[in-house]
Length: 213
Image (cartoon, one colour):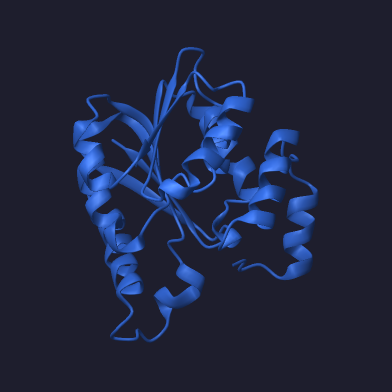
């Protein structure tokens, strides 16, 4: 979802860096072959992820929610020469799809792909992270944050996607809507935890940038 008028959104996209050819192919194949292709970060947000990563120049990146691998490849663009990106997704059916594009990229030896429950996998990772991207099941955002906060290097950045949830976070909540309730609670957590400083950007479906103090 975009919160800008269509003409302004088009102008923004037209005057931003274009996605690399490999990501263009990945984008196209995702829309052709995968269910719920709207889950893809997409060209504009992908360039934002790439830019943030390039500004940080992380050694270690953690991504929670691989999907088809688009956002992982965007984040990998900013890694240091010997950096590593750890990406986790519970959908084993998409593992080979993402791996195919990882292997076509310049980062095939720098991406470690995990399939399973991130709540179980994250505690097994002993690395400290400079950049984390959370884009998985919304009801567990708070749990993911609690697992990663002590694994962050000072000055590290946590990116959280879909935090506006199609605007539902400011609407009357359906009592059965677990995801919206979880995101409202999560957004309050990010804005009140004194270990981080946070800004929420109305980019696409909402992207929060939290910097660890």
